[in-house]
Structure formats: structure tokens, C-alpha cells
Length: 180
Image (cartoon, rainbow, N blue to C red; front, side, top):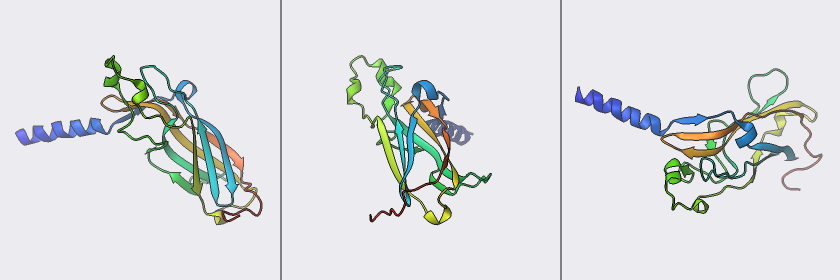
């Protein structure tokens, strides 16, 4: 019986350790997609900006922190993505669960917010893709989920969460490759 109670307590402890909560607040706390560009054939650039750091609840860090489900689909009704650049939630912009704000810091009047890591306000990533799956002029859908203003308080909590979806034509620069 003691073993069963021990296992339940252990499970609940670790279950909460890896928990995640987010709020669909894209306006005040979310990252904005500045651009999605095919800069050369075979390479796509995603540029995200904001959010600024803020003092509510205290010391919230700037920039996008986590990306999930960054995918490109052909705009033909297909449910299967052509490319998946990021699947599950992935820390980006230099962040990880060890360098984000812990809520207990807010209760420490001597804590210096400037001692926290700060990701870039403008975050850019480059991803390679298989050019044989697309033809110039194809209509595509780019979708992703971004999380920002995350902190830890018995679970990771992200105040900002955005799900931008873009319908754009595929037009990489003509005759450009990575070696040009």
C-alpha cells in the first residue's frame, strides 16, 4: 500500500514538473510574424518580432520563446504538410526551461531583472526544404504556433500564444541557389 501511495505522489510530482499552460493572448503578449520569405531556392526564412520585455507579473523576457507546429502545406485542401520544420513545442531564441523567469524571483525584492537571459527582439530562423515538392506559383499555407512571455511557476506558463496562418504564392528568387 505504501508503494502505491509513493508511486502516486511521485507521478503527481513529475506530472506537474512537465506541465504546460498557455493563453491565447496574441495581441498583448504574442510574437508577430514579420515575414516568411523564400530567400533562395531550398531555403525559407521566418522572421518573428516582439514582444518587448515587461514587468507584469515581473521581469517577463522579450522575444519569441517557443515554436510549435511550424509547417508548410500545399493550398489544395491537403491535410498533410509538405514540410514540418518544427513539430512539438521547441525552445528557440536561446531560451530553455533553465533560463526563463521563475515566479519565485518576483517575491525577492533584491532580484535584478537584468540578470535574466534576453532573447532577440527580432528572431530569424532559416530552414531547408525539398524544392522538388513545389512549383513556382503554387499556392501554399504557412502555419505555426508561437509562445512568448513564458515563466515557471510549478509549470511552464506562457502568457502569449499566437497561431498565424498565411496563404501565399511560392515564388523563390529565379536561378538562385545556396552556392550563388
